[in-house]
Length: 111
Length: 114
Image 1 (cartoon, rainbow over the protein chains, first blue to last red):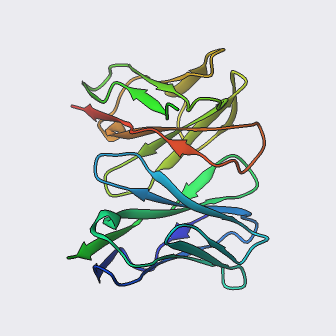
Image 2: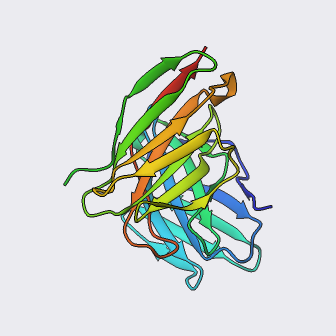
């Protein structure tokens, strides 16, 4: 079956540093990926997405990299701020309408 | 522009009871997906509704059923509640009937089964 896993369950960074959150996926047929941010007591919030025909996509302070060769996805957050503290999920879509989510990485920003 | 809304915010039920959760999609969206998120886990796909039909279903028993109305809002029904059904239930909406559409989530309904 499909699985979406995260390399590190927790990550702590100093305010102002860059953060990198990693995600491994197992299904080579997955064609669309989304990063979500979930704050305590709230629903997941869309951050950025990338399709399988791309290697990199940039947003405001965030960059997503996709390495299809090793089936790896990463989210880079520049100049991390206290408001970035949350759980981050990667989700993959395997040519259907279901999104498969990993367990999540908890990011803590240290002031 | 209203985002995805869900009601109620919190709900407490006892084993064996039935529950109905409600979702209104983001303005302009016509597709609703439901997810179950257990504590400390990622969301798990339950099913998706488009054009008032269940289009795709995850690995959940028939106790979980749903409905979509002509105005695109949706309900999730769970019968014969079990303790293990305690979770955050999330609704996500998207536009279009195609695959791989970006899904936007609501705040969720926290269901506690005693």
